[in-house]
Length: 140
Image (cartoon, rainbow, N blue to C red):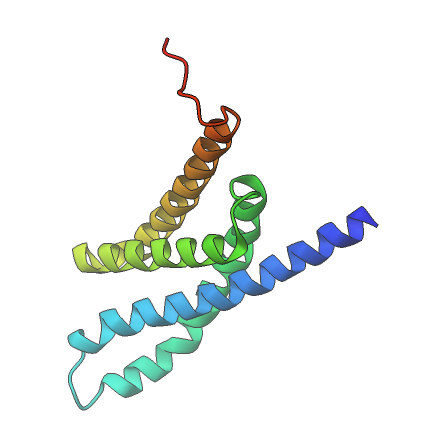
């Protein structure tokens, strides 16, 4: 029964990662593309690229979401894990696209990783301090 539950949770994480990855990819690309395109043509160019961007974001989210959730964020609330990594991915991709149009993917990957790591670090800190029952950490 434990295997079935793990498989169901992983399937849910894959679906959530794919959905959020597609949304973040489309949003980041739209924010980057609209100011760069000529006004008569941006909607055609945007409409032609959005399915590719959405599928790419969905594929990356379907893989990275469950991996990060199982490895780094097992004790992080689900809403915080999904929202935090989505915001980190969006911020990283926009920073990468602003700096150099070719760095959007690298920025998204780094933003996702940084957000997941920070949530893991926060949870580890809380777990360590909860064990002390309000006392201070020992000084070394």
